[in-house]
Image (cartoon, rainbow, N blue to C red; front, side, top):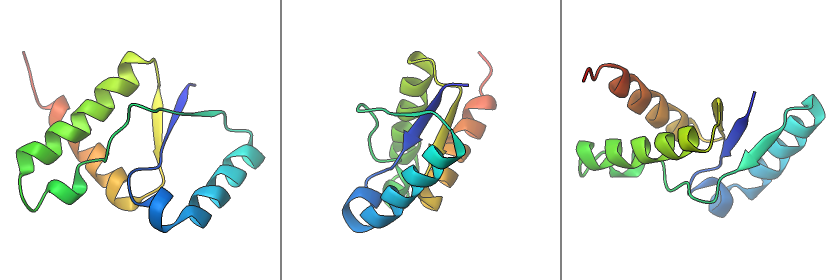
Length: 96
């Protein structure tokens, strides 16, 4: 399974120790993961201003992961995890 690591915009700036320890745990568990340079903020901070904008940003990240062949995303921030999960759910409701 190909895994993308989503650190979001907050973890690297405010909780670098959390990122470092998370990487050590993943390595210790033998989980192979990749950093995706194209990922942006998850969109969660935009929710208060614009639900559509927050959804768009999250869907962009999901599309990048899919285009790069990732089967799963591990998000370190709970806000990122919820935002990406909600966007994925919204996408599953769209029928073309």
